[in-house]
Length: 86
Image 1: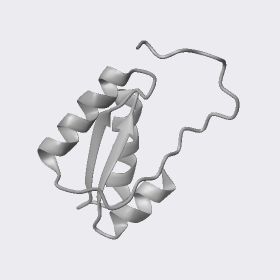
Image 2: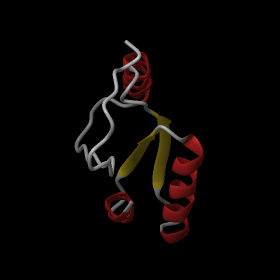
Image 3: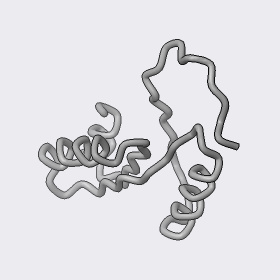
């Protein structure tokens, strides 16, 4: 969240892509409390579901024309073995 906060302080549009919208909204609220005029968008993204990935990409392309920076930060050290839905 620190990277998102710093970018927001520099007037960047920040997309917080999350599996859990409620937690994403909480992060958005914390950042907006520090940076009142920040442009933060919370979008659903579950990387274990390829249909959800496509949906995220479609929604992103509808709203934005480019992506300047991507920071992946899942916070998982050694996840249990699993297969995607697809």
